[in-house]
Length: 386
Image (cartoon, rainbow, N blue to C red; front, side, top):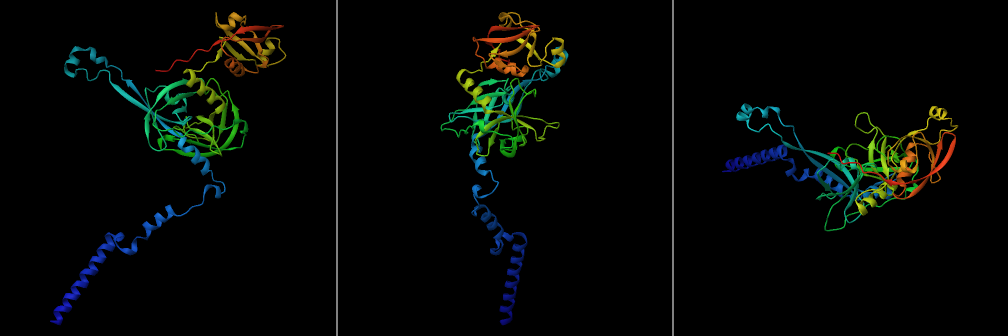
């Protein structure tokens, strides 16, 4: 009897040991002593951490203030493939029908935008949405909304969208640009390569960059904060989280960031946005001329002792300049008392004049210096690409 009880006990112990061995091998998490890893991970997440203000060099407060105001923009466009020439053959059509005929496909793109007001106005780049026939905006909290195009301005590469929501949106704070200086720390926020919302840090490398060939009117903030495809239309903010510019372009030989990025300053962007919201378009002055910078060689050939000014290389017949008496070969040195140093400056000064206003142009014509009164016209809008 005792031998049978001992045998039963031994078998029970053997089975228990075997069970423990199997569980320890294949399901160690089931054992009480093996849950420390899970608890440690949770403790890491929930343990008290230092606040950004207590962390030297942290810009978490600035990022957290602006992140909810930066959105992802998804666009799509319907395209049609070319009709196959074989469809003109009746025998071919008999066997294959119209299956190789014109087909419709959709292309997609992505970019970023900034919520400029609580009632749903979003500022972005024109090149993000210029060919789209459908636009969708994804908020930082994951909600998605169809967007309508309020207006666009290709000459500054800006556009305004609007979405409708039941609750006010987290609008970004605009910065005072007068305080900007080379060397200031800035953060770029956007959706590079579609990986999701991303923050990069750098400094302001230069201000008032122009003559880059990016857009007609240029006055860019240059930064070394990484800006990549998909960041276009996103926010460039200062160390307080306020918006100083709209990320627009990069200098790159490979398509990736090389530390030279450009943002449209808010002095440009805000004026464009307000005009678009108010009237659906941007109104600028125009006189109908072609212009070129006054090089030393050109100035010498004209008998001028200075290179300050812009030569008129073409005059549109019947345009404002033609009606005002400006002629081919004239050199414009001043407009409304403002010195004109180069072609970009003339373009900006004329664009800032209200259509219908009469402005004084100081002209050097040969040996004579004259003043002409020119009635400013309205600058034509660029057509939207198909």
